Length: 63
Image (cartoon, rainbow, N blue to C red; front, side):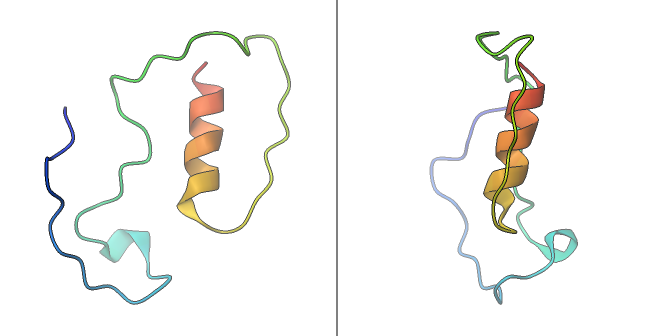
């Protein structure tokens, strides 16, 4: 699945609810394959309540 060339216009209140978002946020692509550079390592991921931290955590866990 490739990213669209142009994203549709969005009108949402911040921070909003993910379940009501249109288009739905892309947290991690199904085709993503990590480089294995962090295999057998431990990571402590901290951050705010944004979706960025969730995406980072999923990317770390898929390595």
